[in-house]
Image (cartoon, rainbow, N blue to C red; front, top):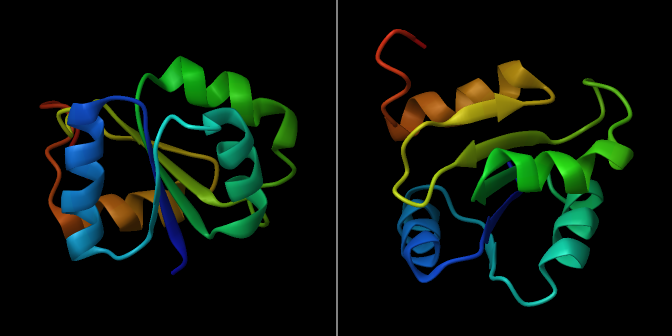
Length: 109
């Protein structure tokens, strides 16, 4: 799977590099962030965004075509908590499970 990690803060950058050691991928920081995220939507099979969900949704919403063709998108906070899977949710959830992130306490993925 071709993966890209996007982050906006130093703490998010540390997490992106840590995750990329377990699941290799390209890493993008806040430089040219919007352009890189938009370009990544058409280039990668999966996007891991370490930031607020609202930021990701506002940028990617105009690009969404269909769940069978869009990349998986997983959004995490800068500490790696609260993973949320978007778009092809099945593929995104498959990304979450092997890394053993802790989902919401009530959710059993």
